[in-house]
Amino acid sequence: MGPSFVLVILHMTGLILGGAATTTTFTFSNNCTFPVWVGTLSGGGSSELSKTGFPLPPGSNSSLSASAGWSGRFWGRSFCSSDSSGRFSCLTGDCSTGQVSCNGEGGAPPATLVEVTLASSGGSGAAGKDFYDVSLVDGYNLPVSVEPAGGSGDDCRPAGCRWDLNVRCPKELAVAAADGTVVACRSACEAFGDARDCCTGEYGSPATCGPTKYSKLFKSACPAAYSYAYDDPTSTFTCVGPASYSLTFCP
Ligand SMILES: *[C@@H]1O[C@H](CO)[C@@H](O)[C@H](O)[C@H]1NC(C)=O
Ligand SMILES: *[C@@H]1O[C@H](CO)[C@@H](O)[C@H](O)[C@H]1NC(C)=O
Image (cartoon, rainbow, N blue to C red; front, side, top):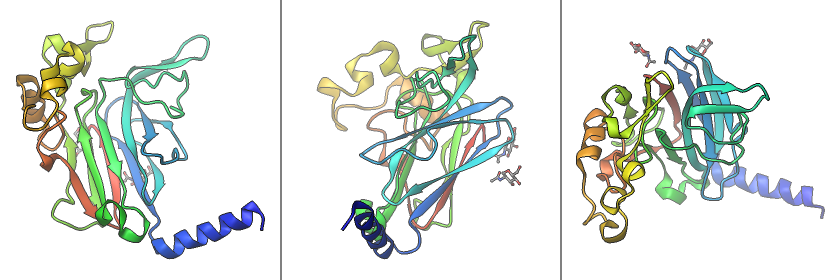
């Protein structure tokens, strides 16, 4: 019995256990007035998606599919260009590969992150639900929304942050371009590194790590996003599938 035969058997088993809906579609739309380069990174042992980075011109959209059980994150990179030697880099969310593809590298904070864990095939894993959230725990660079379609459940609702936090970012957290334009807003944890903002050390539990004046600012602008590590559980959304998801930059 050759290896390809074993793969065929495993694949067929997956189809039988998972039923018809073995993939989930994510559609990325750019509603910003400027280009965005999407980054994707798989986690929890999932293999990388067919693309780990791609350009999304203003007004365009592009789709990616992920298998049951996939877990990972998406983010947008802004103010990207290639230098004279062809090395690609971005002012925000850069994944430091020198290419548009992130190839398994994460984005540099501050970046607004969309975090997803899909229900595993058979509906048993992850309680048979897709989990998703938009996180500002690593800071903010772009407004992003996630809208589910076709799923069910009370928590199967739009998540994300529609506000431009860059315009209201406190000076001490702001990341500015050469011309002074604020392009991203750091989390207080990243900016100051203290245990209270980072929910580490004696603040390393939900009971001891509460909101700060900075996380409250993020939360007031983006109520449907995580503002700090132990933000209230309503920042996590779930859908009983099959569902598809639309991610919009500058919704
Ligand atoms: C994606 O772009 C195509 C072609 O421009 C358009 O017809 C379609 O409505 C867009 N879809 C979404 C979800 O924006
Ligand atoms: C795109 O942005 C405009 C405002 O600039 C807004 O009116 C519109 O609803 C947005 N579209 C989507 C799909 O979010």
